[in-house]
Amino acid sequence: DYQPGVASYVLVNHANCDVWRTILLVFNGNRSEITFKLMPHINWRIVAHDDAIDMNSARFVEGTEIKVSGISMLMLVED
Image 1: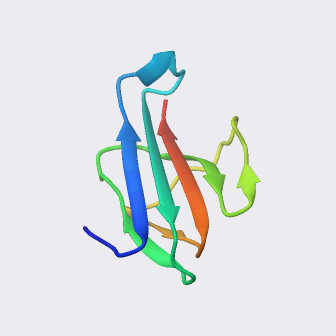
Image 2: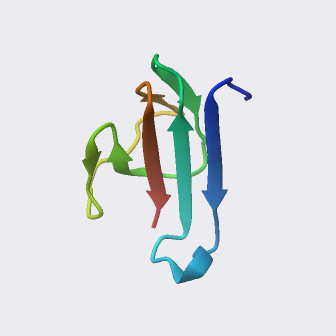
């Protein structure tokens, strides 16, 4: 769904020889938090959220939505 001030895109099929099969990037340019809807068939792992980046994260999204803080970026991956 379209959300003003939000840009997102997906890289698929190990784009650019990435180790991850699918990468989802969400950029929230709003000052307030948003709820971002996710594709339900993917087990998303949280790599970057708020002010933390963990390339080896073991945290996964529960459900089909995730909160994205204001003026921030979110990176989720599918292995």
